Image: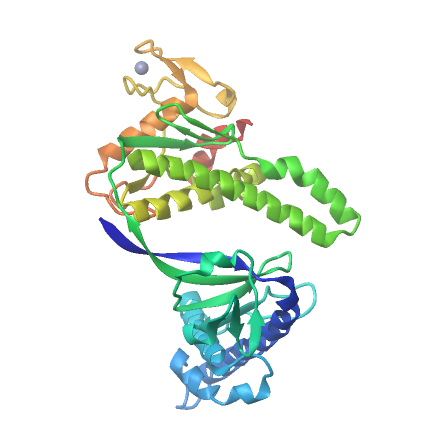
Length: 384
Ligand SMILES: [Zn+2]
């Protein structure tokens, strides 16, 4: 069975166009800030003309604005208006942040466009009267896009982002289900005993980055950050792909990285890629027709996966315990594999009704424990 699925293709833009794009991004910011200003002014009027402007209203108000711009066209202006209105609704605010064009707090460049504005021209692309060349252009062959954008990354390079619809084949996986325990000692351990080694790339590189920053090599430091990010993505992509290809159902614990990021092991948590792994599993699972389930992982490292007794290591003092023997049934456990098995069991317990890829399944009540003790039960992840 094949189903349609939207993927975003990214192409690196050749550096000769960067100057043009930088200048165009400033014009985009101008339109965006105009939308911001006019929306606030209209929404806070005290007379009867007060109004919450929609994207359509903003398009009407900006009609003819291209006359004042040298680079961007009306299609881009309209896209900015619509995006602005959407963002404002999503943020539930009267006013959004201004887009800053210069200085240290500069926003990264962003230039949206409609399908018709970007055309092929031989081996290159044509946008707003300017010819663009991208790297790996053979990937563009046979691709049709609806709308997209040019986006800048922290290093200053520009990327062409094109959401395209692809058809993917859905087939059944060879194995039934697996539980995944996320941690820091090992980034992830499955209930079948497979491990993804810790991916603390930032920890290895932070001294190098600090040295670069001290010497004033800001751009080089940013490149280094980007390299780490890519390595982390690569590892997470490979591991999630392997799981999705092998198993029909993947159950993951609900460790929340934003919550733990406020504690003292924040750096390890941010570096471990849990959020990334979960996100990849979810979208890949959806694409391949698998079930990805997120369950409450309370007590999963404490209870014995054979008999269910709470005989395992718990609390701060027993963080270092990697193997233990169940006092009740005498089973010898590896800490992480045992936790993964418990997560798998938790998944099948409340699993029959949950088959989507929801972030927080309502069928499993959230942990009753307070925030403090929750953080305590997760402290074992800082064991590394
Ligand atoms: Zn036991």
